[in-house]
Structures are given as structure tokens and as C-alpha cells.
Length: 302
Length: 191
Image (cartoon, each protein chain N blue to C red):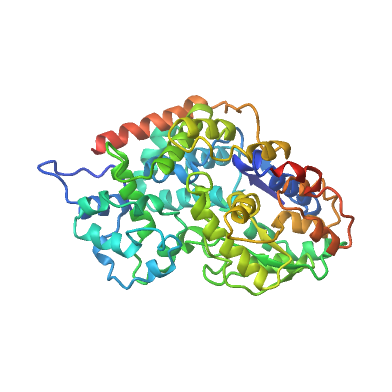
């Protein structure tokens, strides 16, 4: 299967292990990623509060380029990019005047034909293959599947590939990888999103509540599919500890890393060493070798 | 659906509810104050105005009350309110429209750090076509964000190879800059 690929800024920066692990698993899933040429930022959390037109036109440039490349669909692994791209597509579809305005700004003949896919949507369609390729199933690894906000809502934007209040795609994917999803309450709660720097206190409050709930449910690790969720739940654990909001260390894995580990891919290739909270405990519970985890640079967390 | 191009009568200041309806395509009076949005709002504990308060104030044209509150700026756009509204209102989109209204001229009560972050973010995208994270951190600190934010943690981010040291400029930078310029011009026309 060939699918368009919109990495987004985070996958080339703070969350590069998300891209590393995605690229490592797609070969095994008979999927080829065709990157959107010269893609630009989707506008993320900042554009839509400043200008609605900007928040639609920035993603539209990328959709227009994908369309020119002949790509019928584009995978946006970052939940925020996915939301902005899918939302732009949705708004342009329902508003001919807006569509015309966007086209005049872009100076492109954009017909809005490109479907936007989330990582959950794409991997959900490959559950049978993931199961078949799980030579190193994550036996007994209890995972708390964390969806956060933008992967499944609002349903008008996502097209309803999963239930916005009781989703199951991430659990299904993790089960195919051999892991055991726990039942817990906060899998759809917000982690604090883009306020990591500008309002760290809110992120600490919201993210600590999520980690505590995952721990109480018996999870060995939290699984995410969003760079911001990952940063808030992994990187910000130190701030949570310093502010007395959270004790302990909860490994936070990208969904693509979970699939990659089950395929027996080298943890280093999957970028397991780039996390702030060590993933050694996860590796110890899997049949694979525990290398490449965060211990190498743990001393520098400060 | 909302569009920025509907013409309007300039004979007097447009009431807030009408303006928001023009921007979002939804009538703010559709909110019947059940409070389901606020029950699920992750920031309800921190904000002075909860989503259903905002909907009511918009419907009653209370621009003054909305300008005095931090609630709009604390919204995380998690879309919980919009997803759960039993009457098809869209509080998240309404918050965006209000932020857009207040972002012009006076910032309402936008907390300095939040406003500095968004401005720095968009400046990076305009400059490079993509976000340059290191540039964002520097520009955020200089633009009103906390100078000491993440001073102790940044080295550990670098050690993990997570921060690029040089920006990547997209080839279509001219197009990206045109998008910014034309969107700003369209917002200007709107006012």
C-alpha cells in the first residue's frame, strides 16, 4: 500500500523517535510512505486562535501539494497535524466561498480530494498483519492506551473511524502486538496540549492525573500517538515530581514503538533511547533485548 | 459554514452575537445552558469563564465581560465541549472566533506567556515555513515568556538529539509568506 505522508514539524524535531519508529515498522506492513513535497507547518495550536483563514490555508497548501502528487490520502501521524489537516479539509468541503478564497491565496487549482488519515485509522486497517508479524509479542505488558483529544474528536472532522467517547482502535492495535490494554478512565482527557511552556502548571495538573489513573489501573506503560501528549506525559514527569504532583516513573511509548517492539525491531532503531523516562522496565518485560533505553543519557536530565 | 467574505452593513458596530454567527456559521443562542460542555472542560477548574458561560455572554453581546476574562486564552481546544454538545453548538470554534476578535488591537486578558508563545510560534512558521523549535524557545523567552522556563531541562533535550540546531527553510517560503500576508489583509478588511 502506498500512502501520502505528512510528518509535521514535531516528527522532525522533539518527537523524532515517532518518525524513526514509524519508518521502521511500515516496511513490515507492506506500506510505502510518500512524503508530501516541501510540506510546511499546519499552523498547530497557534494559528486557529489568531485567524480562521490562516488555520485553514496553511494546511490546505499541504493538501494541495499532495493532490498535485496524485496522492488520494495522506497519513498525518501527529494528532495535532491530523486535526488541523482534517479540519481544513472538512471546512473547505462545506464552504464554497472559503474554498474559493483559499484557492485564490494559494494560486493553485486545489479540488480538496485528499483524505486525511490518522495513525490509528491506518494501523487499525493492518491489525491482522501486525498480529502475523509479531514475532516478539509484548506478552503480559500492561498498557494504558491514551487517545487524548484530537485523534477521535470531533466526529464531524474524523469521519467517525472510531467512537469519540469510547474508542477501541488503539487497544486493538496493542492487542495485535501482544500487549494487554488495561481499563482506565482518563484515556480521552486532555494532557494540556500546547501549553507545555506557556502554562506548565496546567500541564502538570492535567498530565499527572492521567499518569496516576494509568498507574492505578495497573499499567506498566502509557501508549500515545501524539508528540504533544508524549512530551507532556514523558518529558514533564520531572516537573510533576518537582511540584509534588506525581511520584514514580511511568514509561510513555509511541504506538509505533509498541508495534515495532513486537516485530522484534532493535529498540535503538525505534528511538527508545530518546525518552526521558527510562523504558528499561518495558524492555525487561518483553522477550527482546533491553538495549537502547533512556539510561544512556539519564544522568543529564538534571 | 463560516466564511470571512460575507459582506455586512457598516452602518454601526455589529453586535457580537451576529459577528460570531457570521464567523462560525452557528447561532450562539442555540446554547440552552445545560452545562455539559463545562462539566467536561479540563480547564474549568482554572478559568473564570467556563464554556457555557462564554456561549451565554456571546448570545447576549457581552463583549465587555468576555474581554475581561482569561477563559478564552486558557482553552486548550481539546474539542470535548464541541463533541459533547447535545444541541450541535460549537463552543471550541466560538472560542477561536472570540480569540480572533480580541487578537486584533487589544489582547483582551490574554496571559502574557500564552500570547507570547503563540506569537513566537507563528513568527517561526512565517520565517521558515516550518517550526524551528530552538528559535521558538529563544523568541518566546525574549517576547514575554519566562526567561527561566526550561533552562535546566533544555540540555537534556539536546542530549537526546531532539532539538535541531539550524532551521529548515521550505522551498515554497514565498507562498507561505503570501498565505500569512493575504490572511492578515483579509482580517483587516473584515474590520
